Amino acid sequence: MASARTLTITFWDVGQGDCSTIELPDGKLIIIDTGNRGSPLVDWLKDKPRGVHSIVITHNDADHVGALPSVLDACKSINQVFMLMDRPAAKDPFAKLFRRVVEGERNGFYGLTRLEVGAEIWADPALDARLHVVYPSMSANVLAAKPNATSGIICLTIKSKTELIWPGDAALDSVSATCHGTKPYFLVGPHHGAPEGYKKRATTSGHLHAVSPQRAFISVGTKNGYSHPRPKYIRLLEQAGAKVCCSQLTVACDRQHVMDVKRPVLATHGLLGLNPPRSGFSCRGPLQLHLGPDGFVGDGWDDEHQKRIALLRRPQCLRGRAVFDRQQAATL
Amino acid sequence: MIAFTAGVADAQVSPAYAGEINRVVDQRIVGGGGADIDASKLRTFQFPQTMFPVDGGKVLLRTYEPLKLLMDERSETFVVEGWDIRLRCDQVYELPRHVVRKFLGLLAKANARTLTTSDQVQWLSILDQVDFKQFSIDRAMPHYLEGTLISRRLGQPAMVEWADGSRTSLHARVALPLTPLEPGDDFAAYVKLGNDNEVVSIESVSMLAAV
Figure: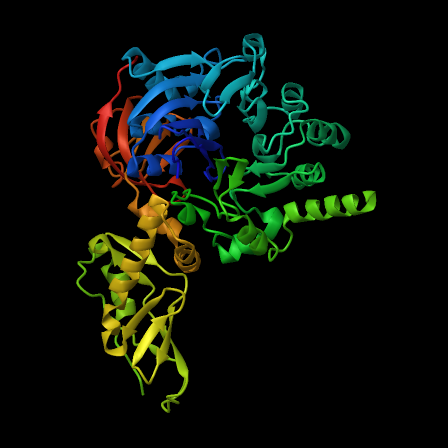
């Protein structure tokens, strides 16, 4: 529970898409990406209406922002919306998707702020915590050829140390350049486990070692047509020392489970009092972190999840971890 | 020979589900052994009903497999494996109500984040047995969506482009509330979504003006 002076961070299982929420000490929410149309976040907000401190849209892709009109409708109140306002305003479908945002801003329901480097989304002096934007700059945003190239990178720092990174669909070199040496506790993705340039083993490994996250969460849908996440990237993440888990199971880990069993590996949604997505089969499902006196702690379902994925046919995360363990043993 | 008739107690079942439920409640519990029962041992039975009405039958709680009942002959009671429900054998007709009650009780605790450690163990066991995803989707409220009507003909499926750029072909019955619209009209509506974002129903349609 978001009791006094703590943070609860939820990485939602929205199928193929991204959505996270931060429950602040005052009970308000920060939403980082909304997930696609039909996002379970909307169901949850309709059941438990909340005041929202900020909605942050990392970039203009439907799997990150598709549920925005529904989320705006389901929230009790909203202070701020952060988004890439310089991106294709005249281009469908984003002009349509953001119609409701613009309408709300004009009616004075919330403020609209450009998502760019230096923007501070939230800060709490008592916790010495700060959520801020480290990418993109205004020029990078305007000049980017594709939405992913201009994806916002959001960092949560506690006591001046970067603990969590939300890079949206940003390329690994952008993440590495902006978060070099931070050694965060948690990295999301990026890009559903297939960031641009991941095929170049040496550079990808270099970027991951430069950031050195302890844990990584891949938000991915069982039914995605892009072969996300890429097993090679998961292995590189594990070999860089990050413990990886994916929101949903894919055929790369266990085709039979996906095709025949058709049940979640772990129904974490129910365990955490969250709503499940409308498609796919959960592997880790959603994941929650709570800020305690000694840093972040998990939701308590990691061990159960590990036990269950060991029974899958080819769990890609465990394969990468085995290689990492062998390397560590050899070093010792 | 032990044979119980399972029943749905005190529930008004939605006509859409009535057939499904009746198929299972008319069956009898299938015994785990023959007619001779060793009273010193617990006997295993299956409860054939796998759909349990919630909200007066508007929503169903489905189990993946029939529930396992462990019967104690001496006390003439049975427990439901993994559910911590104990009933007298002559109250088996009450089982659907107790199953739903147990499920809703733990769901409420999970939502309030007040599950104790023992609750968590039991809740995990129950979630492994029920289709929680389908239950949640069936129970979810409609979402506010915006879109554009692409095409519509009387009695034919209608094509809609949602604000995120994806297109959906709507069954003529589902698209009926869009009747006042012409192709090209932008609209907002509350849309009940099913599995894989399938449109189940549309209500409260309004036309959108340009901002």
